[in-house]
View (cartoon, rainbow, N blue to C red):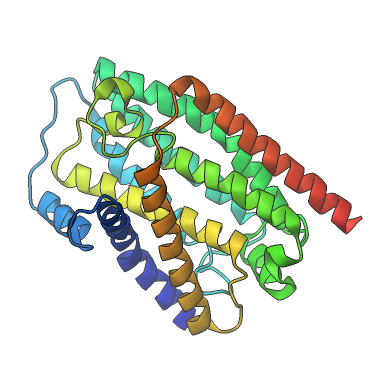
Amino acid sequence: MVEVIIHIVLLIFGPLTLLGFIDRVKSRAARRAGPPILQRWYDVVKLLRKGAVYSRTTTIFFKAGPMVALACTAIAALVVPLTGDKAPLSFSGDIFLFSGLLVLGRFAMLLAAMDTGSAFEGMGASREAAFGAMAEPALFLVLLVATMPCGDASFSTAFSQMADTGGLTRDPGLLLAAIAFGAFLVTDLARIPIDDPTTHLELTMIHEVVVLDHSGPDLAFVTMGYALRMWILSAIFVHLLIPVPSGAPLLAVGTMLAGQFIVAIGVGITESVIARLRMTRIPQFLIAASVIAAIGILVQFLGVA
């Protein structure tokens, strides 16, 4: 019960703080003072107090998109362990529920974007759908690497076994899986080198143009859903790199938080020193990620054999 409470507290307070920390790292890397770490919280509260503006061409799909995406991400977040042992929602095959919910959340936002009737948002939805479909094979291959040793398609079982066996120090396949998952993470979250989250040029946007017409509480839901999505994907990335201790919730939480903010520092520095890829290069980037994950499966299989 205590682990479940800690898990929910982390899901409430961690995601927006993580985004604020990334913004602060990027500001420091550019030698600027930057916004406060809690700025994302201020923005969300301000948006929740405002009203939403809807075009006459939109329907219920546009209004429901942000709420459905946030709900799907929140349920998926209950599947990923944050306290070392079992997640609040843990069962055999939960990785399929997790993957399905991520896809459903993206579909809801794409449907909302297309419902506006805007050429720009339709273009962004097309890009988001295409790159998302290219990235999903890498995700499934990474999950296969993580769950194959334990023989159970469950995050809790897989991560618990990683902690007991030493993680990537004993399994080189996990290192390749972590590299591939890092590529999936920046693609799914539309971060550099795939997309620039700070750009305002519609012709080069991917994720930002999909949410261009949302305002007020709807935009707050979009921001919270995005932050929560980043939090849980970063948590999986941490599990692949660091054997989060099982059986000691406080130590596991400390390890997870440290890992999360190390990932945030890495994302902030990466976005400060490199530019985004040309759009024609993104498919090659994602194919390479899938190939690396497939090599991880081969390495793991040979190691088991």
